Amino acid sequence: MIRNKLLIGVAAATLMSAMPVFADDATPERLSAAGTEAEAGNWLMVHRTYDANRFSPLDDITTENVSGLKLAYAVPLGGTEPAGFGVGGFEATPLAKDGFLYIVDPWGTPYKIDVSSGKRGDVVWIGETGVDKDPNRPILLASRGLALWNNLVVVALNDGRVMAFDDETGDVVWDQQIATEPGEGFTNAPLALKDKILVGQSYGDWATRGWIAALDAATGEEVWRFYTVPEPGQPGSETWLCDETGNPDCWKTGGAAAWVTGSYDEATNTTYWGTGNPVPMYDPEYRPGDNLYSNSSVALDADTGELKWHFQYTPGDYMDYDEVGVQLLLDTEVDGEARKVLAHFGRNGIFYTLDRSNGSFINASPYVNKLNWTAGIDPKTGKPMEYDSSKSLQEYAAGASRRGGESVETCPNIQGGVNFWPTAYDPTTGMAYGAGIEGCSDLTVDAVAPEDVVAGASFSGGSSAASGLQTGSIFSYNVATGEQTAKVERPYPNYAGVMLTPGLLWTGELDGTFGAYDSKTLEQKWSMNLGTPFQAPPIAFSVGDKEYIAIAGGGISIAAFGYPELESKAAANMLYVFEL
Image (tube, rainbow, N blue to C red):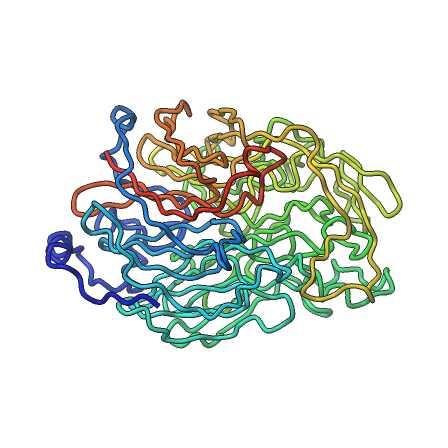
């Protein structure tokens, strides 16, 4: 492990001159103030603020001068081991605090990097996790970020452990095995709030049962756990009709993983998380019913983990439309009435708004070019028009692939629409933004007997293949009206998500292009091709009085969508930082 405890005099002087109002530790008070002017130059948590808006107020880079943006420096990172194998996608959001950047590679290894000079990034330490780096393990390798809490740097690992490192030295402070069942683990960034660290079990598709847990931030000891698949007798268990199949234990491998970091409303002490598809993903006959709390937004009491409300988007899903994506929290007027809103770009191709105080449905509007799986959303209930609560197996507009039947084309693609990559909201304009995939999939069921299911092994219950050309798009919506305000087509599916600064939207693309777009018109104002695929979102931060934009690129193109030029890219994990 690299250790570098001594800062050179120039860097120390720079840090002194840029000292924020708060102490250097990422205290709970400081995290709470992440959206204030005092922290404008930092990015202290994965979504920057608890509302998950991913909006930075830094405004030195504008639509008028962004054409002069240049590469300031780049930092090579690991994560391609063993022996340059290139496993995993590089999907992590960097964090920025007081002249330092923090990031994880696909294995979850944390890095602290000194960028206080503005000229280069010097690695201060690399945390030693002890993860078994076997590329043949049956997992989807990714790590989407880390958390800061007081003097700790916290990571959640694919082997089910959560670790905390000393911010100054990189030494391990605590190491807890939280996920203990076969196949369980983490890909999401932890969420630090008050005295807790929240994590979501990420491997639902590996024949596991999803859950969200809170840990004592000082020790890593588990405080509470909410299961996204209820056991028999618990509320919601009546929607798992396992007895109809002769397999009463189908709920035990029910999926509904929570693999993207949630958001948090401090005023009501409520944390909001999206949940994944029921498992097996393509074979609802294995687990008939609506399958709560899969494909849902769930609102939990942050102190106890008690469920406050839920909203399920696609009951009895058989199209892999899990809804783990970002839960945007915002306040706006709807039909002249002040509302506290949760906005969500569904993987199913529909943009939803809910009342976040109780989960009641407000509005829904398609955002993809082709959507065939439903004829529309019921304006009263928010459910698909075809939904029938009396049926144990749903069949939506495109039809349902069934055991022994033909394949069915569903649009959007099984990955969306918008998937795990983040969306954003501009509180100054009331516009929400996303980027995603334009295309469809062909789905086929392949029945698996209960005795052949292996916990910890992929359990799809079928197969999928891209149907036709898959492209991408970037889009914006007026949250108050639910209307699309702009859209631009892109040649490749987007896998990186978006970030906002005043007047500009930023995103990376799979061909290595990083670009800035006018947030009103979505006209591209600047771009540069860095060669490495972008599957991670950018951030904005400052050192002293200068604004920078950072984004991580690299990892194998796990989502090449059949494009030879994407499939052939070599793995090269890099952190890029840009300046005017």
